[in-house]
Length: 84
Image 1 (cartoon, helix red, strand yellow):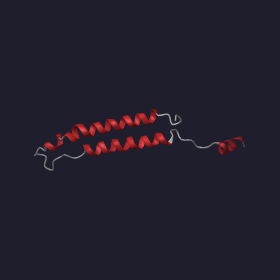
Image 2 (image 1 turned 135 degrees about the vertical axis):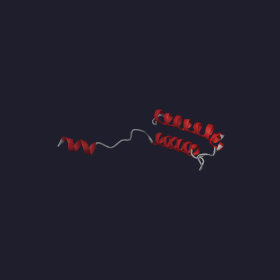
Image 3 (image 1 turned 60 degrees about the vertical axis):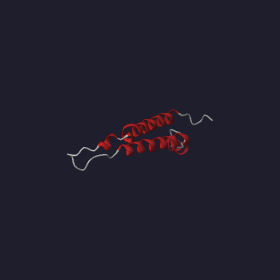
């Protein structure tokens, strides 16, 4: 009987606040966009070299976006949602 009452009174709570989840989704989108920018650049014929694989977008921009996304994720986890 006591367990039933406890279940009725207990309200499900989220681990993070709304602000945390917003930053998490922004970080996730940034990481996904970085990986999308890294994709491609291959050649249809394996005997032909495609220099497009060394484009600045794949070498510099995409990994930087992924690292920024991971930084946003860490910030979102450490953010205190109760602090105004």
